[in-house]
Length: 68
Image (cartoon, rainbow, N blue to C red; front, side):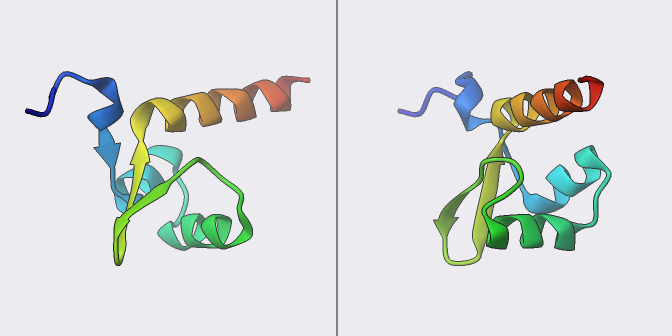
């Protein structure tokens, strides 16, 4: 049985990630093609997902880079 309280299962679609980051979904596509941006994975053909905790860590690291 799947543990639905596991934070690793808090998966976001690219559209949701784009909205949260305030970027165009095509920006995420370009980042994926270049190996940049937040960590993502493919669940199947045409099914891209991002883990919320990894997205938050990526965004916080980027914010820290701008302050330096």
